[in-house]
Amino acid sequence: MLDRVETTLEATGSRFPYVFDRDDGAWETTADGNWCGGHWVGLLWLASAHAETPADRERFERAARAHTERLRAAMPRDSMFCGMNFAYAGFRGYDHSGDRTLFGVGLEGADAMVDAFHEGARQVPLGKLAIKGPEQFRGPDSDHGPPGDRIGAVDNLYTAVAPLWRAYDEVGDPRFRDVAVSHADRHLDWYVREDGRTWHHAVFDADGELERQYNELAHSDDTCWARGQGWSIAGLSAAYAATGADRYLDALEANVEYYLDHAPDDLVPHWDFEVPAPEGEPRDSSAAALAAYGLLVHLEDPTAGERDPRVANLRSVGDDILDSLVESYLRTDPDDPARGRVEHGCFNRPGGYATDTELVWSTYYLAEALASVLPE
Image (cartoon, rainbow, N blue to C red; front, side, top):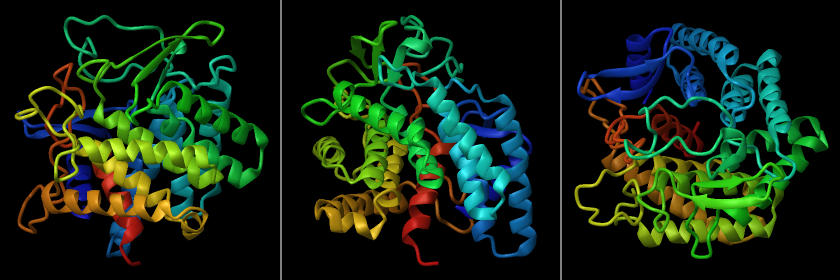
């Protein structure tokens, strides 16, 4: 995977890799990282930490710092993705470098999530960032949906809330804890269904009252978007690790049980867990990478296993998903020019965009999961 970071950096330079265009044989890029630029910064810091030579370590660090400045300048503070991106570029950059200015970037992201929090809905809304993709995100027959300040998403238990746990742990400001707990509890109300599957979106009115739930990137409202399930698993893992609260562990276990009951034998789901006639439908390795990452990285604290023996079982599921990804979805041939590529990611099947390809976030979550289990 270090090789893939290197070849990607050579190919993209000062731009951010986004999705790999298989027709053109090149990365589709953005100038500012769009919603997911922090994943690339995080990969550059990982590469710096694990590179074999001082020159390579310095090169990857320089690139991480330069991309952080571009990301910080462009990221809307009212986007639910701001927290996640600033956590990867800031807090994790600080973890690798000890640079307190990067720590400040992480806190800036956490502050932005507190400011964006809707007290009535008890949600950090989606926000107004224009996500790069098809003109009509759900496909040509769809509309543009509700405004971003009146809609929440299954993603943002992780993207918006996980940085708040870190910020509270570091500085002890109860604002971070209170927003994180309130948002996480609303996640249980609005996004986790009785059978363990998840809704993608919840729309609320100006007072924060729930109007409706729906699935934008799933096959239908009666099925389950696979990456949304992965986001929920990662978010609930972080919430339980931060609090030890049984309600988060119970919901996490339900999410994982649904995942296991509806995934193929290799544990890498189709883009929708219950899409009709799944033969020939794209898999989504990024959903699997998110699930493995959540279960292995956020449940890695040994004290979590002492709180409840179920944690060990959940980590075992993470191990199994990780094994499958490395065995069947990661290109590992040393002579392969695309060595380190994570195959078969599906970004947006309803919109017909990047439906079976390499996605920068797949690479990041798989790399972080590997780094958490491999020996130093």
